[in-house]
Amino acid sequence: DVKVTQSSRYLVKRTGEKVFLECVQDMDHENMFWYRQDPGLGLRLIYFSYDVKMKEKGDIPEGYSVSREKKERFSLILESASTNQTSMYLCASTLGSGEVGELFFGEGSRLTVL
Amino acid sequence: GQNIDQPTEMTATEGAIVQINCTYQTSGFNGLFWYQQHAGEAPTFLSYNVLDGLEEKGRFSSFLSRSKGYSYLLLKELQMKDSASYLCAVKNSNYQLIWGAGTKLIIKP
Image 1 (cartoon, each protein chain N blue to C red):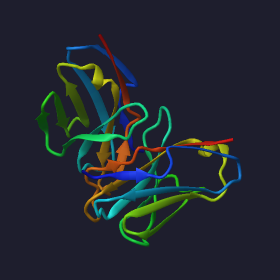
Image 2 (cartoon, rainbow over the protein chains, first blue to last red; image 1 turned 45 degrees about the vertical axis):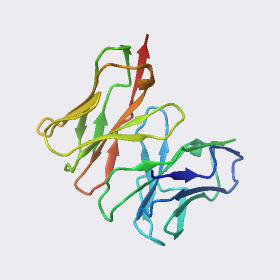
Image 3 (tube, chains in turn yellow, blue; image 1 turned 135 degrees about the vertical axis):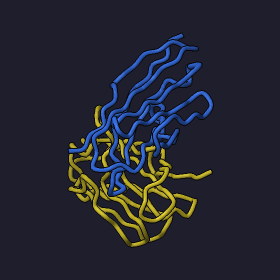
Image 4 (cartoon, rainbow over the protein chains, first blue to last red; image 1 turned 90 degrees about the vertical axis):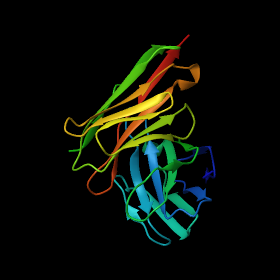
């Protein structure tokens, strides 16, 4: 079974802090994604990556950056956390290059910024 | 703009049948996904439709009409464990996924 593991289930940070969310997948998937999930809204894509060291902006990249130094690991970075970044963050991966197939999600990281 | 519409919440009775609708307006179409998400857990894949018609997978079926921009997820013989949110997502012509806000399904005994 594909496993996507996110480093932290729950985090509480203060405004202005730097936050790292890590995601690791164990099935050699090429494509990895970071979404945020908020009540009443569909999943919103923050960044995605189709290959090592490659990254593309999604729909809401402002205030975020990402790093993909190894194929299995995709990190989301909040350089200076703000209260409006309080959310559930979901990492996902999928096979293939270019097209989006079935997504495998991690358990999510619920971030609260005070 | 692009949007996916699905009901916010539905309630059904254990053992019954429920249909969750999804309508979409996207720039092109390259497939529609349904995912299930239990509270506090990761979404998991249920079905993928790219051609018109009904796809059956056990108690769950998914239907697509591309001309109407419409899909539904049919759940039969409902069980308490089916209480979850059901997410509809469409892959557009750029292979981007557009997500609905999800339908929270409540199953009552």
